Structures are given as C-alpha cells and as structure tokens.
Image (tube, rainbow, N blue to C red):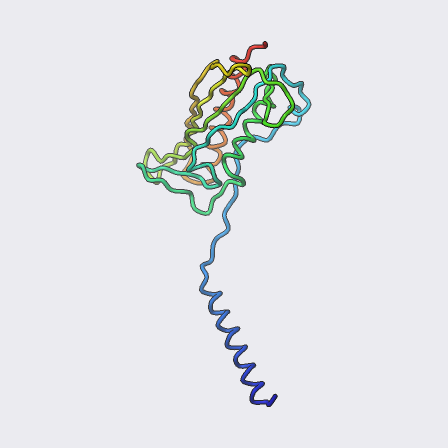
Length: 209
C-alpha cells in the first residue's frame, strides 16, 4: 500500500467520523422526567395485624384509559394534555392497585381482600372501576387545578354473583398551587380519602356467611 493510498483512506475515515458527529449533534435533547408516586406505604404494624375473616375477592376492573399510564392527565375547558417532564414512577393503574391493597391491609376490620391467584375462598367479589383520575383546571389554566378521583364500586356474592350493592365514590381535592409539587400531594390525598370510603363501604356490605 502506497503512502498516498493510506492517506486517502485515513482522510475518508476521518470524514465519515465527522459526518457521524454532525448527525448526532442534530438529534433533539430530551430532558429527564421527574418521577412521582401516590399511595401511602403500608405501615409495619399492618403487616403483623390479624387477617379478616370475610374473604372478598377483588376482580379485574377498568381504569380511565387516558390516565392509566405513567403520565399526569390534565383537562382545561375540554382540552386534554399531559404535564410535561413529569411521570408517575409506574403506570397509574399499577400504583392504584398497590394503594387498594395497602388500604385494605391497613384496616383492622373483618374484610380480607383476596387477589387473583390466592388459594382462598371468597364470600364476596369486589369490582372497582376508576372512571376519573385527572387534574382539572376549572378556574383557568394558570390557577391551581382540582384533582378528581371517581370510582364505581360493585359487590356481588361469591356463590351466585348476585348483586349486593353498588355505589359511586368521588373525591375532589384542590391543589395548593399550580405546581407539580402541589398537584401530586392532591392526588395522594384524593386517593387516600376515596379508598378510606371504599374500605368502610365494603366492610359494611360484607357480612359473615
């Protein structure tokens, strides 16, 4: 190989590398999303508390499709958008499931919530459909939004699936400010309050058989 040929090849490689560098620099830079969660962690004493005697099987249910993922849904005058650079640490539907289990585990009432796959008999079946899980800007796009969590609960008997009771639960919590740091606590409070009511209602319906 002559020196001229070698120099030409080196020049070609250098030009190709420079072109690649140029291409990489044109790619858009994305900002890292801030991660949040809702739902209170299960207290240590709840892990050792005695289990309830009335088995309630929690069946599969629906979750508002637009907000079931890891983005925070907002609604302003019918316009739907997601809060930029902000994510739940896991899909909202998954965090909701964890919050439901924690709420029942923390309760010392007679109900024992049974999940799919558990080898336990169920006296009742509980279905929780999350109809709304969103932050609404009801006072304009610059004002603090109101977080709305709306759930339809339905209980049936485990033996014949006859309807025991149905009810809609809704909590509306105004954020302290129009900032993510204030909106997330509003979600957390709304979830906690609606689940508190769901647990109390379930306990009232579930009679020992």
